[in-house]
Image (cartoon, rainbow, N blue to C red; front, side, top):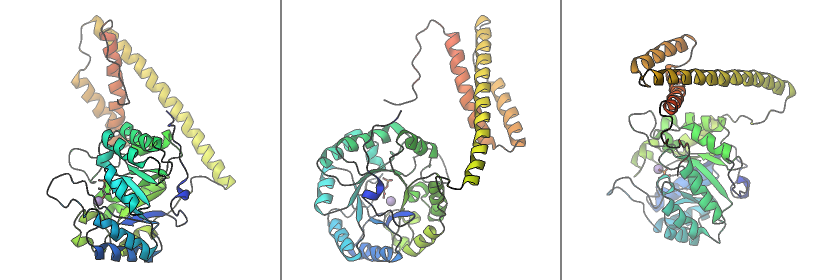
Length: 374
Ligand code: PEP
Ligand code: MN
C-alpha cells in the first residue's frame, strides 16, 4: 500500500542546514523566565532548528499540571523575537489551532493521545483548512499504524503539505526499559508506505529517561529518520512535567555531538560493490527461507488433514513446547537470541495453526483474517 500524500520537503519549512536536525525545548512552558531562558541557552548552542514547548498538556490523570494555557503563546512570541528560533506547540482542539496561528507559532504538532482519536484529528484538520502551517503528527499511543496513517491523511487532505510524522513510541503493558516501546518496525512500515514523509524521532518520550536519549537518537538516525525532538529544560530537576527525561541545554549539546550521521546512499564504487555482493547473499537466503517456510506450511496442512481424519485437536501444547525449547536451544547455539527465535517461531506456528483450522473446519464460515484495522 503506497499512501497518496502530497508532501513538501522538510527543507521548505525548517532549517535542515544544521545536521543533525534537532527540535528542542521544555516539555511544558512553565513560566516566562523558564521558557525564555531555556530558549536563549538552546539558541546559543547553534544546534537547534526550532523551539518546542507544550502549553496545553494532555495529562493521563486529572489534577496534574495541564499546561499554562494561552498566556504561554505570548512567552513563545518573546522567545522567538529574542532568539530567532521558530516555535512549535502541540494542538489538540480547533481553538488551540486558531490561537496558535494567531500568535504566529511556526509549527504545530498533534499529540499521541489526539492521534488516537479520529474525531479530534478531524477537528484539528478542519481548523487547519486554508493555512499552510507545517504540522507534525505523533504516532498514536497504541501500536496501530492505520490510526497514525489516518491522522496524516486527514491533515494532508485539509491542504497541509508541510507534513512530518513524529515517532514517540507506543504504550505497552508491563515493565519495560522504555516509557514507550519504540516498536521500530511500525515506524519503518510507515516509511515504506510513504517514502517522502519525513519522520522525526522523539527519544524523550520513548525513553522517559535522559540517560537513554543518545542511544535512541543514534538508532533513529541509523534507520534514516530525518531528525529528533528532544525535551530540554533549563533545570530538569524542577520541571513540572516529564522531569526524568528532560536534559539541560548543555547535556543536549553533548548528545548531539555524539551522534554519528551515516549516509543512506553509497557513492564509493568499491564500497557499493561490496554492499551489492552482501545484499545478493542476503537475497538468496531470503528466497531459501521463504521457500522452507512454504514447505513447512504444506506439511502443517498434511498434519491438519491427518488430525481431521483422526479427530485430534489442532494444538497439542506439549508438542508446541517441545518445538519451542528444541529450536530456541539450537538458535542459542547459533548465536540467535531466544527472544528472536521464539517470536519467529510463534509467527510461523500461528500461521500453521490458522491453516490447520481451515482444514479442520472446511465447510464452516470462516472469519476473514485481516492484518489492517478498520
Ligand atoms: C509532549 O510532547 O510533551 C507530549 C505530551 O508528548 P506525547 O503526545 O508524545 O505524549
Ligand atoms: Mn513531555
